[in-house]
Image (cartoon, rainbow, N blue to C red; front, side, top):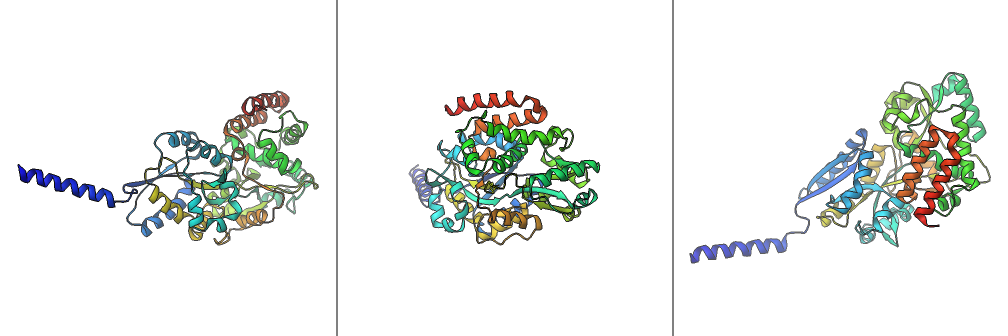
Length: 413
């Protein structure tokens, strides 16, 4: 009996000793990321490199479709989250940081030199003076267009002004070609239209005030944005039944030559077949008012660590690895995006190069995107209203009045 007790005691001592020396990161490092089908291979290649460089880390990765991911993220963060998650910068990141659901990564920014290598996107990674995300790729937004369809319609150059753009739409329609595809079932694609029309008509400062809830939706300047948009709808420059298409189902429309243009982020090019990509050009959203400083949408995709992460030490190892110039550049290349790390290799894809040049030369401001610059509740209502407007633009005044009532309720202004 004494031997049994002594053996048990030694075993307990050994367990206690192991607990003292074993790192807090012991166990499986769980990572969940949002990915479309064509993005998974790029993610997985980076994770495989991490596992090879860190064989002691048991890494488990889960992939979730983008729209389902947006719905589920809040629940994950509040209850039992993975150790690392993909997300977006700006207000979307700040929304969770201000609620104490994200780990403070300020020390990681200092340790890994990110204050220098990610200087251009530091502000969008920051809330209340602290950093809560690791930037990955940046999307430039502009018009994808079929060069062959432009040529068929007698269009010899990319439009740089709104007048030229409208004239090109008229020529395409006359040639029996739908001028513009828009996957309006994904409401955020309509938000890109609102962003750019507002940025081109009213400018970056006005746009950010609207995003902050400081401007009424019944303001004539907001209505002017929608009225400019309404002209395109009334003239039937968009594809038929646009509200039935999402981003993935829009690709065949361009591949099959059923539409000439698409306003979208550079990531879209990664999913296009090689033959279509060779026929595809890309240009900046045209200038509407030359007196308004030119601003762009340049949303940054990121990784975050939940405050309730079970394995923070290994999570920080993964974040540091994903934030290196090499991996940042590989991810951006695979996704058709622009690297956020200034030491990463510049993109060589023709469309990405145009997007890189566009953002690099932008002096009028770079917005994160409609639902990344605005508090979530207001953004959700705003994008739902855009779908209603797109379905029936004659309801514009009623829609703007409802949005204004919502703004007053949410912001109490």
